[in-house]
Structures are given as C-alpha cells and as structure tokens.
Image (cartoon, rainbow, N blue to C red):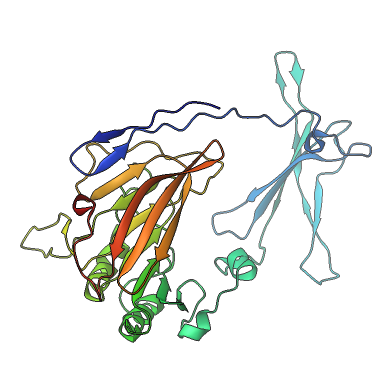
Length: 339
C-alpha cells in the first residue's frame, strides 16, 4: 500500500491540507480492443466523425475513411419516421507524409437540417424529479422535504436573473419553508459560489449576487455544490453589503449565512483540481485536492454532525469534520475556530 503525507499548512484562511493523493497508473486501451478492429466488409467506412457543419447549427459534416478504393462519397439521410430519403454529395481527398499514404478521406456536408433546440434533453429524459410538486415550471429547480430537512435544488445553467421563472419560483418558495416542520434548510447547486481553486473560479458569481441576500435572510444552513473536482468547506460568510458607493466588496463572517461546501470530488476522468489560489482566502475553512465523500448526520433540530471522508487506497479517512448548529433554532457560532 502506498504511503502518503498527511499534514496541514496554515495560511491567511483556514487549513489547506498537504495530503497528496498518490498518482495512479493510467492503463492504455489495448490495441486488440474491439474498438480498434477494422470493420467487416470490403472498403467498409472507418474513423467516422460527425461535427457541426455551419454557424447556425442546421448542418452536419460527416467524415470517414475508406482504405481499398474511393468508393462513394454520398450520404443518405432522412427524418425520423419518414420514408423519403435525401442525398448529399461529398468530396474525397488523400495525402502523403514522407513514406505514409493516407486512405481515401471523405467529407460530406448536409445542410438545412431541422435541429434539436430543446436544452438538457438527455437530462430530462434520464432523470425524473418531482418538480411539479413544488410548483416549479422546470425540472432544473425544485424542492423536496426529507425528514427534518427542506432541500432546495437550483440550476446554475438556467436563467436566474430577476423576473426569470427560476427567480420568481425561489422568491415564492423560501417564505414557504416552515422551520418548525423542517428545521434544516439545505440548498444544492452545481457551480460553487465560494471557491478558492483556480478551476471554474467565480463562475457562480452572478448567481451569488442575485440570491445570496435571500440565503442570509432565510438562514440557509448549508449549501452543497460540485463542478470543481476537489473538496472545500467555507466559514459562515456573506458578501451582501456592497452598493455602488460604499466599496464594501469582501466576504465577512456572518452567523446568519450558510456554510458553503464544494464536494465535486466523487471521481472523474479529468482528474483532481489541484491548483489553488494562494494565500488561502479567509472565508475558506478547509480545502483538500482529493476524492472523497461526506455525511451530514442530523441529530435533532439544533445539531448535525458533518464529516468529509478522504478516499484513498480503499479506506475512508475522516479528514474534515464540524458540528453544525441550526441557524434558526440554535444560531450559535459554529465556525472552525470555535471547535
């Protein structure tokens, strides 16, 4: 089992973990894999690529290679459920590079297609959510009740400006939350608002400006976000005092504000986000470039125990933890320095 360094570095903000995840060997796809097999049949098309073929998104360029002879550069295409077939005539080229001679490379442009304009179509068909139950007009923002928690899901990639459907829904939704029935108020979103990694930095800033005053007003307990493939937990901070003349534009400690947790660390093909802003901002309580998972264990209406577990070498190591005090029922300072 590989050995790792487990230490911390103190800086302007909270704690930046010095844990370094072991670099794992990348296994190349074997050349005998079926994806590399030559397709059966004489002069069968290989290396087929499809890309957008015009500025408006109503065209496609289909490219492929034949090895034995030029063959046809014509593409047949048709609409779904249509018996009428259309034809598009392409071109064929070859090239030489030193002693290499390419196959016959075909390019065919198909124009004036009826494009798919509905956004997030794969998501809406694969993942069903009960958005209508909370009077939402779209499945990208909605709310659910789960035991003693009221969970609000927001969409970082849908319109959220004033008078948009998401804005109007959230404006009406937050006053509905009964902290007697559901003491804990949690918000989920994709792009983090408080992020000290040099990845997706400040992508959530305009959304923060729109909605953060509401989060403070209604005493949201915690906000979970992803997007950045690493881990970070903030102190309770807000940045809502700014107006065009006072120049107050830095986050400050605010016991009515939520804790912001970036937990996009479930693992991904691109690898970890490891490049952090330095020095660590004062709003950042703990950050670590590692994969992991977290547990938010609600004990009662006033207390919850939160723990983040580093995943390395098959073991779940608790690397960060905090007792959360409910902002509505027990608004006591629960910052890292008090614990």
